[in-house]
Image (cartoon, rainbow, N blue to C red):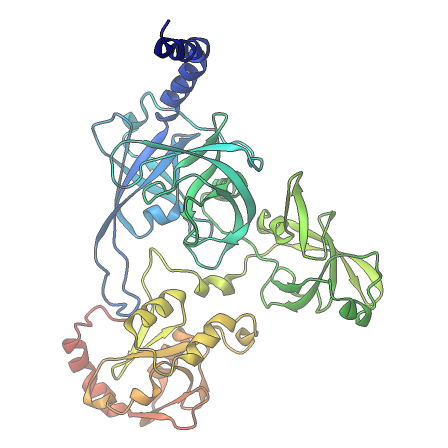
Length: 491
């Protein structure tokens, strides 16, 4: 026997002995790809900087998968601002129209349904599994950009932690980190382990190669339970700021016994679940009978410590939060209902709706929002904007929302002789009109509509000089401004 044949024989024997394994994997994949869906989307939003204009129409693609009830689960960012959505499965030649049933921007999930039921013929329905163990393998399936055929990548679960979801830019939930390649178009695709979905591919790390993130099944199940009543309400918030309790000097100052771990409450936010129940410098010892460590973590499962707010993250509005706290030398048992903090809405990216605005003499006003902040920075019209930046990020943390509901910003000037001297006030926050403190944009509109004074006197925060417009001049110039800037649809 030649050396060449000698080497080939063990290889042949290997495939002979283990061919059932490969055959089984092939059969499993044949089933799996019957339930994976390619999604084609045409979307168009509203331009935050020019809120009377739509943004450009764009085409994109993503992935989804079929779950119980002939529904298609995918990412919210795949179908955000969608005007028209179609789906197709492996080996189908037709594209099928779908309707968006529910979309949750705070956890980046959406539920779709094909209108023509023939789409589901000979399909596979996925079931949800548990959160995968660290160092266990997963298979990510999807339709990445660059081809129309289904793609498979494999990776290992390398981390489980709470992290910010990029779609909203503010919400933090549990994520699963894997070293599988996740590319544009993979978004919304299933991560599979032992035939069950254990996560949804949704974002990648910009700081390393082949680091992708999955939305775990705990978040998926939260979303599916929330929409059982026909609408999506969203996540609740504990509404506190905390700090660790490692500092021995601080522990002695607050007279904390050595036997107690936990985290200090440093601020209770208005509108949160904890308002009226927790106090500054309470030491949170446990949540729902789970001990809280000095670093603010609890044991989620046998291999993971996670931030204690993960317990709150899994509760729906009205469900009880149970805390044990140390306060003024005593251990207290507290219980109160979970609440959604609507005060955080302005900090999320905005989708599927326009932006409310108000124009007075060519001065354009909007309430602060992340979308406006992003558009404003892209336009590089940022003079005088430090006030806007600070108050956007600290409006809730510094409890500025106790005074007003929302900041109103003069962020753009539609040039006209009537407002030629207004550039000094650009990007400042409106404080009052004719001495009336402005609470939000709706209030501004009402005040300006009802005022009968000869002048509009606009006072901005931290600026002594006021911007003054003569009412008669504003009324005379408004039709001309609307015509010049095509504002027929302005509010």
